[in-house]
Image (cartoon, rainbow, N blue to C red):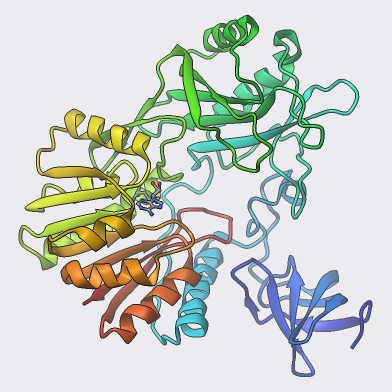
Length: 449
Ligand code: SAH
C-alpha cells in the first residue's frame, strides 16, 4: 500500500477523534469523515509505521446511520464533528469511545451503558467564544470558529447549537464594528483590536452577558458607545465586559476583566440553585445535561449514604457541591481560580447554603495538607485529568467512594487504572452527552476505595 492508492474499505468503528477505523491487509486505516458501517472508496493520504490515513473519494454503500448535517457550515467549521451521524447512534458511539478508552488505556474491561442523551440537541450551548480575525482589505472583523485543523476563522452567520439570539448579536457586532473603531485582530502582525467575542447565555431565562476581548489596555469612548448601542438593541444583554489581552498568546482571556456597562454576570440555575456566571466563570456549556448528570450523582448519594462528608475537588463555582449539600453533613469545595471561588461564595449566600466551605487552593496542595477525611470525594478535573500525587492524596483522605466526573475518557482510563492498582474497585460508569454532535463525552465513574 502506498500514498494515493485507492482502496475499498469497510468502516468498523469510530475513534475518539471522530474518524472511521478500517482494516486493509492487517493494517489499521483511519478514514476522515467516515461513519461506522460505511463501505467507501478511499485514497491513502499518509502511511505511518502502525497505521495509515485515508480520505473518502466515494461512498459505495452508506451507513444506515449517516444523516445530512443540519448545519450549513458543517464542512467549514469543524466544531460538530459528529453531525453527519444520527443522534441515537452518536450516543452509542460515545459509549463505545468510553469503553475503548477504558480497555486500551486502562486495561479495564467494563460494560458501558448507553450515553444519556442531552434534553436539547440544538440551541444547547450556553457559552460562545468566537475568535475574531480581520478581512484583508477592509479589516472588518471575521467572527466565527476556526476551520478544521487550521487557524483561519470563518464568519459564522448561523450556529444551530447555540441560542438563536447569539447569531443576531454577533451579526450586530460585525455590522457595527467599523463604526466604533473595532478592527478585527490580526494574529500575525498582532494588530487590530477585537480578539474574541464571548457570550454567556442563561438557561434559566434569556439574559446574556457579552464579553469583548481586546488587544489594548484602554477602554475608548467608542467601546463605551458600542456597549450602549448593543444593550439598547438587545435588552436581554444584561452587561458588557471587556477583557484586556495584549499578549501574543493562544489563551483567550487576559488577566483583567472590567464591566463597562450593566452587570458583570448573568444568573443561571442548576439543581434549583442560582449561580452568578461571569465572563471567565466555568459553568457547564450544556446546563440541561449538567442538571441530569448532577441529578444522577445526587440520586446515587441519596440511595447509598446518610449525611456524608463530601469533598468537591476542582469545584469551579461549587455547582456540584451545592447540588448535593442538602444531603451532606458538610461539603468542602476546592477551586484554584479565585474569581470562581468568589462566585461560589455569592452562590452560598444566594441559595442560603450553610454547610459548604469554599477553599481557594490547588487540589494537590489541599489534599496533601488536609488532616480531614471525607466519606465521598467528588472530583471533576480538567481534560488532563489528575496526577498520581492527587490520586494518592484522595486515597489518604477518602473513607468510602470517589465519584470521578471526567470530560476526557483517555485520562479517566489512566487515572482509573492507577486507582485500581492501588486496590480500588470500579463500581459503575455512566456517560452523558454534554457536547452533542461533537466527539466529546462526559463520564461519571464511581469508585470504591
Ligand atoms: N465541578 C465544576 C467545575 C469543573 S471544571 C462544575 O461542574 O461546574 C474544572 C475546574 O477545575 C475549573 O473550575 C478549574 O479552574 C479548576 N481547576 C483546574 N486545576 C485545578 C487545580 N489544580 N486545583 C483546583 N482546581 C483546579
